[in-house]
Amino acid sequence: MRDSTDFLNWLQGGGNLRSIRLSPNAFTFALMTILKKNHLARDFANVKGFKYIDDLLVGPCIQQSSTTAPQIAYNTLCVLWILSFNDFAVKFFEDDDMELL
Image (tube, rainbow, N blue to C red; front, side, top):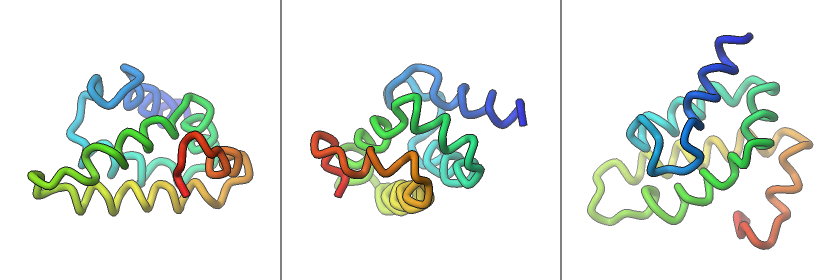
């Protein structure tokens, strides 16, 4: 369990998309995989993980020049879907400032 938490912390290392050590495609795929564990989803949401999602939605998901944009968008929507099953994430979906819905 500790290794998965360490991996999540490594993924979120810099605090914004520009400082991520992976491509957006790899980053979103990793999130989609590890956030299926409730304790990791909670940690992600508590560390402003929804800011990452917001940044993905207005950046890499809609870049017209990127051939990976559709895959990044799919992965990001899957992450949102996974998080939507957790009660602790509801407040982020209801946040009007984030405009996720």
